[in-house]
Length: 476
Image (tube, rainbow, N blue to C red; front, side, top):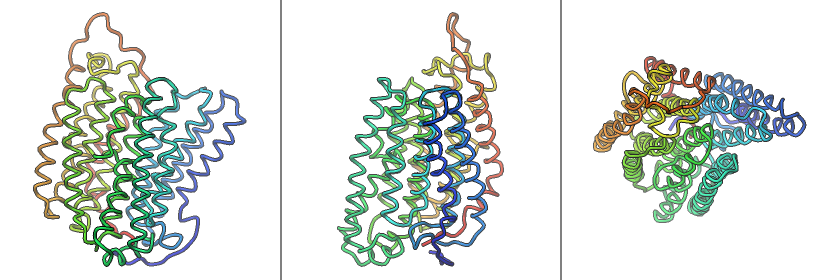
């Protein structure tokens, strides 16, 4: 644990979060007064808030490690990286959504909900107090429920209902777990809990931790909180599906890592073993369920469950190796960029809902196919994409942390995942059947796909430089 150089209660320390929340509030007010043709201004305001937040987060990353508002919110490498990744991902989702939402009667509401849910993910990533973590969970969840059913059609309503029911149930488990940990540790602040939980009854700490894990694994989309993912992703619009499978996951996984290295670091818990089991379950179940999926959004939904398994590798060995933190942060950035690139291709071809709908893409839209290939093979972990380096560092962290068997299982799952990604790529390179029509192509979404695929390659090629930055100190 690294020494915190100072504490303060300056609201400017939370400037990225404040900018996003303020933009949401202003956008809600503007949406009530602006005519439908000009509600795009609220989306432009959201993009400006995200851009400003990225700049302020990058500037704040150079400052010494400290905490804000007592010990409630950490200002360290974990928070700075999460801010940049979450806000950048939100920008990409906005770029995918704005052309679709243009002149919609609820356009402003969509942007407001998106910003509030992203702000919740930011709070989860930086929270160093159980109560703030619970508040971030609720802020990330409630707007997301509305986003899942935003279209108000049958599939969207079903998606929102399943998402809400499972989220509410596991949210109750999470709040119960926080209550139990409060009883065991007589505090909610992470530094105080680290001392108290080490001397608390083991059964009480274990029960509270399991309840807390239920909520965080729901947000991450990992086993056993994964049941909502396929139906919510398939039933919601493609930009919302891209959001649900990316941004909440970042906040939840960083929160899990922070729990491991601060409040639970000295507790008598089999943390590494539990995380290893959940990692294997997530990657294996996600891969097996994705093998024969025909709907592309459902395939990506199971893919994101499997990706949680790989992302849990550094969480499992948190505190056991210095590679864990940089492995998690780099992999999260790589995954966000690559996953959003794959969904951008789905957004660019709104009428191609199944794998067979992509048949002949090589001849009609070769650049779009190239982006799809880079992103799908990137999710496998093919060099020189960013996810390849992310998996390599995550596997190295598992080896270094004494869990070589976990890295071997992850490698086997990685090879197995190649099957269902190739099932999507193969028809796109084949001749298209006469009489079929793929429909219109969204140029804006295609541009996002090109940018994300290129970014995945660039991040992979210059990953060594990025990794050097991500190993900085954390608050605790």
